[in-house]
Length: 454
Image (cartoon, rainbow, N blue to C red; front, side):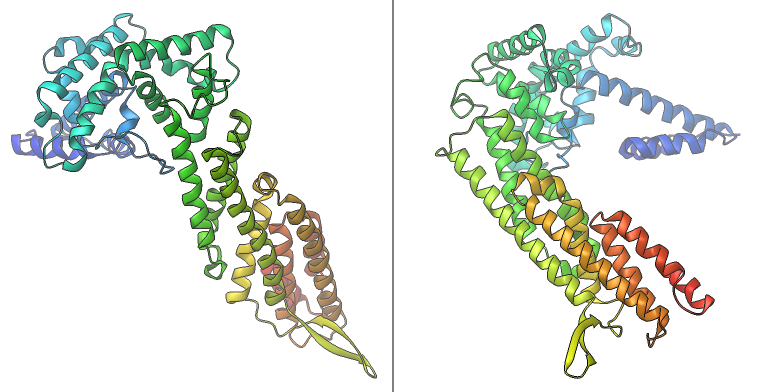
């Protein structure tokens, strides 16, 4: 059987080169069992691409993640993804015979070769910038980006030494481990005037949780504990970026509207937890002067989010009243009392809003403590647990006494009350309500329907 033509190879090479890592692995798995000469050639092309990417990842490990935007949106030095394969080709073009030494991780020459390729890449960025970063690719960022890329590659050999120690530096490093970090920072400063901050930028790119960079920063100098160390240094930008991230998320929280239902709840929880994590880490890592700019910004951010959270709790309380309303019923003579309105809709905007808000109430326990709202949240949870449990009891009593006009609908309201209890983490009362609902009513068919609804 004939093989791939030159045109096929060119087209496939271009397509394979654009495939992300997970797609490339899926395609390789799918092609593995295909028969024929063309399939064999395609498997070879895929294997070569995966080997090439493994080598590239190993060589450019200190800066690879700088070619991806941060998932948390925090500002950081970054480069266009299209530059990465161009940089790699320029790095290896003069010494391709050294590539095989990268395939064995235990090869003592692998790190030396990787650092050598990084030096070649830095030279290519300076000598042939148009080859690495085309002039029509993000032209407004190009000049500074090329400078940052070359400077980062200059420090790649030092950053490579630090990558295995990141987890140690984030936890409880001993004196020797701290000395290693400080020595790397000093060596980077000897290479570039702003080498310390560039080194930390490279470590920052490796951290999914942006706020953890503060631990490395404060441990990177023997004077880190001195009051005003960070704000007086070139490293202050990291704290400013984190506080800007808090401000941005606080703005998104303020614009949240529960009427949309659960669609935006995950994003709200993520934003609130992120703000709480950053502010808590700032409290632990730094001693901020309340009168300083950072102290003021932290205080303002905490106040803003705390006010939003307090409003959320008040809104949740009212939302339950709207979703499961009560109505006044006459008991005897002129006496009356409040009882569940069994005609209330089981679905709709009010029910969706209550569902979203109570999910937030249940998910904000940790964040509420950071923002000083945990007492109010706990008080609300206790009040809602009692109210929802009482509501379910009354409806179930009416159902069992045959006084519910629509038994199936009444049981759906009970199911909603049980769901609300689950959302605020009142799990045992929720289970009790569901057990009672499962055997409520006079007709087996209705009981079965209520069980399915629950």
